[in-house]
Amino acid sequence: MFPLEVEHRGLPPGPAVVAANHFSHLDPVVVGIAAERPIRYLAVDELFGRSRFFDGLTQWLGAIPMSRTRVPLGALRLALAELRDGGSVGLFPEGVRVWTWGEVEPKRGAAWLALRAGVPLVPIAIAGTDQAMGRGATRISRAAMAATVCEPVDPADHTGRDGAAAMTAEWARRIDAALDSIYARWHE
Image 1 (cartoon, one colour):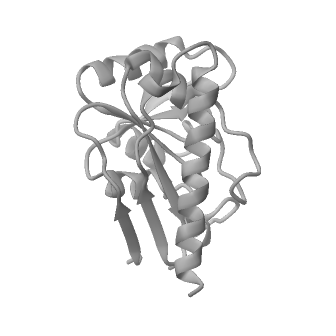
Image 2 (cartoon, one colour; image 1 turned 90 degrees about the vertical axis):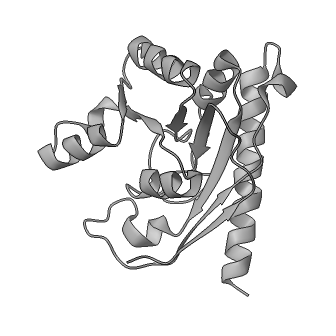
């Protein structure tokens, strides 16, 4: 139904924190296709309770509900357990669906989780999902989409007091470069 271009630059074997930019409700599906393996997502609890279908689908996809209003200790414990068991956990560091890349300062949670678990942080850049079902859309439209699996950010390179901030900044640089590359290809 959708033309999806996926560029892989290496999803490492074993546990990983997968972090993507966030334009659309379609993003978790696109990330899952690009990663080529199951991912449990941390999803804010305000997403639940609006639609039984959406709630069921989100739970079936392995979502880990996470509070936006209080410290999500239970969700973080589940995410760390998933990583310890060799799985992958996905997050959207922007914290919300955005209209354009860069409008929201990314949060450090993905980097903190990767550092805490000692696993790579894998940036995945997504483009086009904003045209297919972006923020404010009520229907899905046919649109070209792309995802680039970027080079992982190694937590060993970002130890110290500001490690999560440095990893988050590196994540944003890699997403930015990958999005520039995707948009350049589309405008050739």
